[in-house]
Image: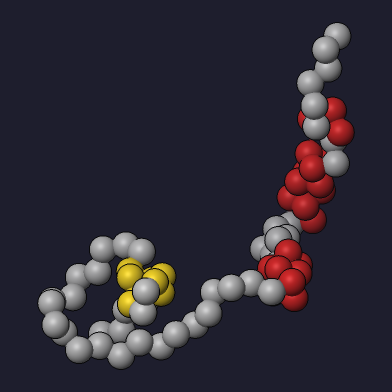
Length: 76
């Protein structure tokens, strides 16, 4: 059964980020998907921030996000 395992490539070796339940010396096939994000990828992700939210939810999020009183504490 296929498994998805995130790994880091260091010193010529793929090192899993989390524990992998595979027996030692088991032969596997790796399909490599580069996770580095380019600006266009970031913009694509940012455009999906409101996916699945109702217009009321979006209004509530934007009200909080644009409320400048939350940016710093008043010393008064």
